[in-house]
Amino acid sequence: MKNLFDSIPDTLDDEWFEELVQGEHVQVERIVSLGHRSPASGWYDQPRHEWVLVLQGEAILTFADGEEVALGAGDHLLIPAHRKHRVEWTTPERPTLWLAVHFQA
Amino acid sequence: MKNLFDSIPDTLDDEWFEELVQGEHVQVERIVSLGHRSPASGWYDQPRHEWVLVLQGEAILTFADGEEVALGAGDHLLIPAHRKHRVEWTTPERPTLWLAVHFQA
Picture 1: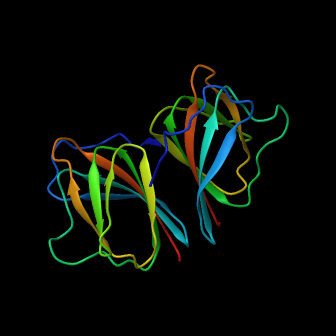
Picture 2: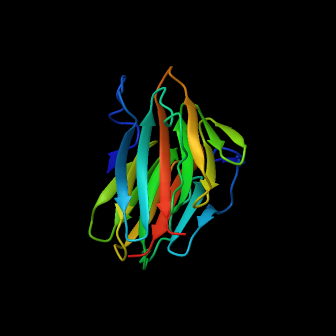
């Protein structure tokens, strides 16, 4: 047994991805952000669906189709495969903890 | 966007299962327990792997091989397919909120 809230650093040079579960068709990962955002140019364009849940902290996702979504603790949404998106902002005040489930489209 | 902590009832006759994501090979569900446990006889014997995470509350899982695991907020573990288990106890004091990811073995 492990705990999702363990080992969250106070400082973080880069976003931190940790794989929790790896199956043939699914991957569950923990992501820790601390003021990080996606690179200024370009979008994530992923071949798999991604369901994301924010467990603590705050974040803003932007989609190439113009939608912008602010997420706080407990908020979750499905990002369908190839829906282009980026992490526009995460709070610099404390770590933002995400759970992501990637699965085949 | 939805929030995992929304719509948690104060009373609950039965455990409450809500599907959040359904893929061909994966299912993510929210489970709310309030003092519930598995039926006194028998074990869950599932054909798929199940990764469980407790988001709030407290629970005890028991395995047919004798292991017993107490879970609190943030605790997570993988229950491999066909590892027989049951929910031995959940706190009656407040809702226990689980996230479960079922995926093909």
